[in-house]
Image 1 (cartoon, rainbow, N blue to C red):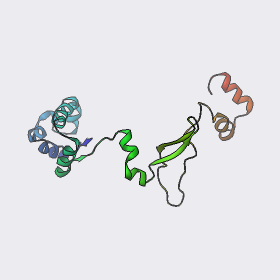
Image 2: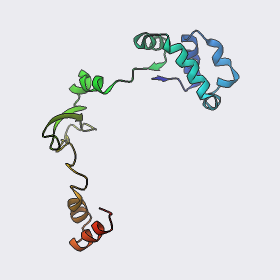
Image 3: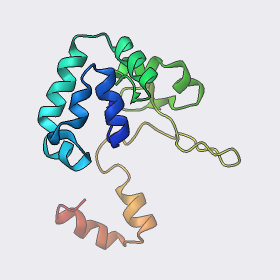
Image 4: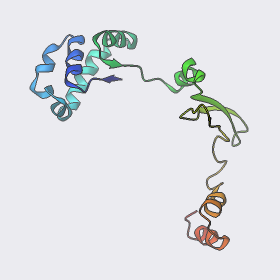
Length: 153
């Protein structure tokens, strides 16, 4: 992922790519022009990036002051030690498959009122309808049945 929307950052990207003339090209002169010509610009950047390893791109762009970083696969996210340490990846029980699974943690992390994960989600669609409609929304049993008959829930 490369973030170079601002004009001066785009100029640094062009320098780092060895194509400083792109920053002066009328098609890419400012944010609006780059937006109008985004497909062409994306192709030029992709051509440059495709000839390099991700680590090399990130190294070159970081040195040039251009924000960049990898887009991780699910496997990389799940195994990321920093995400694990901050509780962004958490274990919880999934009753649909009857085992512990990994999933997103609770965000934000609050020091005095930390959140917790109670489940991986409903075992089936509509599992909590009575709790939500009957409890929180105070619908009567007659109203709940009418909603079921109408196919709303």
